[in-house]
Amino acid sequence: MRKRGLRGALAADTELGAGNVLARVLAHGADPDGPGLTFDTAVDGHPAETPLTLGRLDERVAARAAWLHEQGVRPRDPVAVWATAAADMVLSYLALARLGAIPALMNGKLRPEIAAEYIRRLRGVGVLADDAHTAMLAGHDLGVPVLGTPAQAGTGDPATAPAHYRHHPDDPIVITHTSGTTGVPKAVLHSHASLFAATRHLLTMPQAQGTTRILNALPAPHTATVLMVNQALGNRAQMFLLSEQGGERVLDAIQRWRPDGVFGFSVTWAELARFDLSGYDLDSVRLWFNTGDASHEPHIRRLVAVGWHDTVTRDGVAKVPGSVFIDGLGSSEMGHSMFHITHRADTDRYGRCIGRPYQFATVAVLDADGEPVPVGEVGFLGIDSPSLFRGYWNDSVTTYRFRQRGWYLTGDLVRADADGRYYHLDRAVDSVDAGDGRRFYTALSEERILAACPDVTDCTVVIVAEAGVVVTDVLLELTAGADEAEDRTERVRAALGPDVGATLRRVVPVRSADIPVTVTGKVRKVVLRERYLTEASS
Image (cartoon, rainbow, N blue to C red; front, side, top):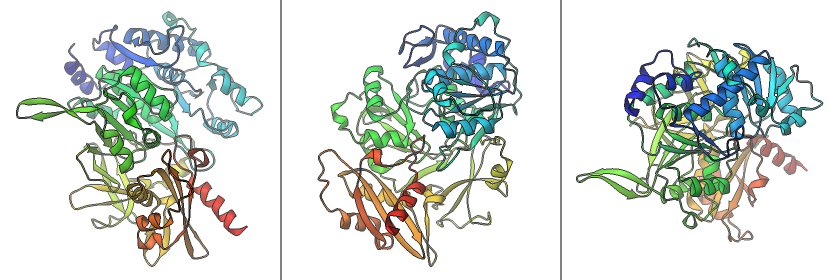
């Protein structure tokens, strides 16, 4: 079947959902010798960075499903998966979904005590963990047994795997978790239908350029990787999944694997901005796709200056220097980015603009009572979308705390303009009420500093309100060779503007390692606030 015909057939398939994409793609006649997935580690003796065909991928998933079934895993059984390799996470997800079980994918960088508590709260039937993470769990009360390692699961006999579970649209399909700013992250539940809603919509649209050979630089346990795997399988695209997403690792993979599209979080683009990209061969890249937090203008501008893209001219399609960057705003709970905006080298709509909503999403800007605010005013972002998560696993209190008048409250502060475009100012928890109807925004402040200071590759703004006094501390990550001793206070103050600039207490050059981040790269500003309040009082 031609790819365009296959995509249309998949979009119209009412049985298709996030739990059976691999099986349904094969059922619709996709070539078993066509592209499956490529991993950066070996899979059951199959060499690293060598593509698994679609048929071979299905076989390796069946082997794991057979082994897990032998361990007693059954439909709707939650099973935690804690490992580092992308192959371990993705293949375990596909195998558990085949059984109708519920994989709970965990970021490998969680602290052991946090991971153990998270597993206890899942109230599942067992844990799959690689050797390193099995050792980290030793001595912790998990409430469930460690079933084995993902590598052991690969020793199953694919011929004995049970028939693929037939999912209902409402069946739970996967539990991922939020990055979390403090404590145990929230367990985000998606269903067979909800986690496929955005993919089904995209399958009805023309396939975007830069989506035929994809480098996945998203964390493997994240909702976004599950989405991208299903999209790649449905598009019959080639996808190479990285287990580690540091800037140097991503640049090396681009040069060797030659993708036309790179998918990642804003933290990866910030890391790439620390490198002189002119020294790398990035000519294969046509598309950079960002989800999670919206990205900053200087990071985007560095990326769109390399690579190339197609554009339509009077003489036909022409290859134009400079790549395309699609930005947006998404989270585990949203089930996909809710917004999109396209940047090229010659575009200039920045200032934290996240563009317009996707057609499948309805959005609103709300006040504290859940009522819409006028165009141009800042409010809380509310979302209604078929892609939304089903709730927080075993935590209905938190689930309903973020629901109001039919909207899911994302925790973001945004505004809309008269043209229907949206702008992301901050996460609500990171903003500060400065009194007199004023509110200060850390993310917007960071955008302004980066735009004004070319010798700064990234920055973190921490605003603290204590005893009625607002103070602002700015941490700067400098470009290579920049003078750390230079006093940048007045430059930063001018960039912040008169209101926030008047509260500036100090500007401190730091290294990226000095900034506490969550497992998905979000800066833990709550921790930084506590640190600075302690320092200020001592």
